[in-house]
Length: 136
Image 1 (tube, rainbow, N blue to C red):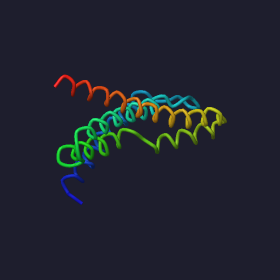
Image 2: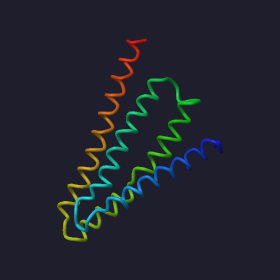
Image 3: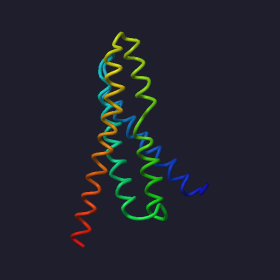
């Protein structure tokens, strides 16, 4: 365990969590409604993480600056920004409010949209890297 890298994850996580909490507070979800803020946070976080990891992977081995970015931004900031716990709590709240169908749609839609966002970001990141390589 490298203390410097661990500190990057902790600080990055605090930053990501603060951004997420601010967004959740600024755009609260009405009771028994689709949790659009958490959904948007998780999908955008998945997209950015896919783009980041594809870019880092195309850049070479996971060491030095690439490892620092992966841990600080990927694990730290984006790990704090995205939220499985809010997603789970909101799903249960939808069930408890009698909206089980919406809870299932939210759960499945969130996972599917996150996977699609990450996959699309990886394809875009790869295309951008090939374009950069051709231009060099």
